[in-house]
Length: 361
Image 1: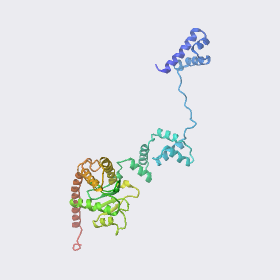
Image 2 (image 1 turned 30 degrees about the horizontal axis):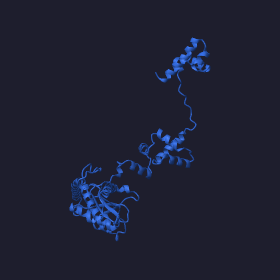
Image 3 (image 1 turned 135 degrees about the vertical axis):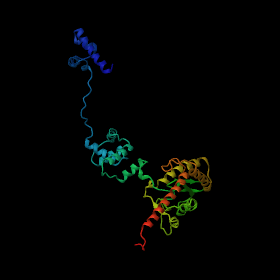
């Protein structure tokens, strides 16, 4: 028996007691109930029976502080326009538009609309764009959606074989006592994730060119491959006047096309940026806690051993390798490159044969 039924039967007992005693006042005194309340119970019981003695739910009425539909639409629209803003910032923006809303009211509306987290608001924004044809996203919205969705197609770099595109970046490692600042020149092949790295005490065009000349170019020459394109940021060690900048001169000598990332957008060089995080987490942060290094050469020796393991032994979970080691993907890419070149040469020969010669024309 639920509480409502127990209370109804208690009130019914009051009515039965008054009938048995023949005195309403005495029954009300015994049950500690007023006479007006007794006659209210009696009237409800006569009209509705036992159910009339149960408490009725309160009748909902209009809330004086409830947000209007127009204000709700304004909050939702502003929240989707700036999905990373918090409730206080949304309230401040609305205040500038002449709409007075508290941060808690914004938060309560988000909960009702199932958009209380940043990720949920980003998903709602994507759904809105898909449903409403012609809706254009701002640069901020595009950047946030890509950041929230790691499988976003536009984030993937397209390369068909090793050497078609490599990425290079300068990573500040830290300070070493007696040595000074330490920088890592990191180079990653976008097809196989084969990585190269060399440590320096400065970031200059000479150091950026040295890692290519000393490590990268010999490796590709040994495998009978060429580097077609290289992607870097706009740092001074990579970009300068072509005729006097050492890095630009080296690329020109080897016929490598230089491509640049968007300014202040490191995610466009994602392959090498992800490698930087890996080498920090798996090598540097562990190595500096296990061993006291006294020279740059000593640290470079251990880094070379780690790179050997990274390229030849460690399974890579990147979307190209799918658990294979980078060296395995690199060897597969060499075969794929040979097939692509053979197909292109066959097409060119067929095209030359189909074109009329000056004598036949």
